[in-house]
Length: 220
Image (cartoon, rainbow, N blue to C red; front, side, top):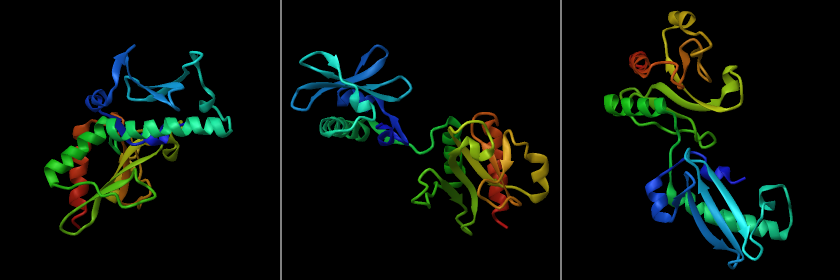
C-alpha cells in the first residue's frame, strides 16, 4: 500500500540506525507511538531492503490490520495517514534515491563515467526510470538505460527489468539478436539500435565493449 514511497530508493542501514532502527529477528525495526499514543507502530526493514509495518492497539495488545485492506471509513483513513507520515520520514531519512538497481547497471554507469566523463540524462518527466548518454562533441545518443516490464520484450512475467539500448551496424543486427539476451531496439530505430538485458546473462566486459562500439558509431 505504501510501496510507492520507496520506489527507486535503496536503504542506507547506517542512516536507518541513526534514525532509530535496531536489529531484531534478522530485520531492522523502528517503533513509535501514533494517534496520541493509542497505537504502537513498528516499521520493519527486511534484509533485502523491503519495508513492512505492524500496528498494535496498546490497550488490547491486538494487531490492527484494517489499514492494509480495502477497508474505508474515517478512522481507518486517519490510521493510514498517520502511518504514511512516519513512512515519509523513513523514506527521506533512511533511504537514498537509486533509479537503476541492478549490479550491471551500476557497473556500466561507473564505466561510462570513468571512460567518457558522461552522466546519464533523464529527459522524460513521465518516464523517470529512463535515461540516455550522449556524446559531448555532437550530442548524439550512444546509449539508453531503461526500466521496462519483461513482457515488453516478449519475456515471461510483468516484473520490471533494466535494459540497455545501444547503436549497432545494420549488417550485424540479424546475427546479434537472439531474443534471449539481445533484442531489437526497444523504442529505437530497429535498423540502428538493439537492446541488451542487464541481468548478468551478458558479461559486463562484453557490455562495456559494446558501449565503446556504440560510442564510435554515434560519431558518424
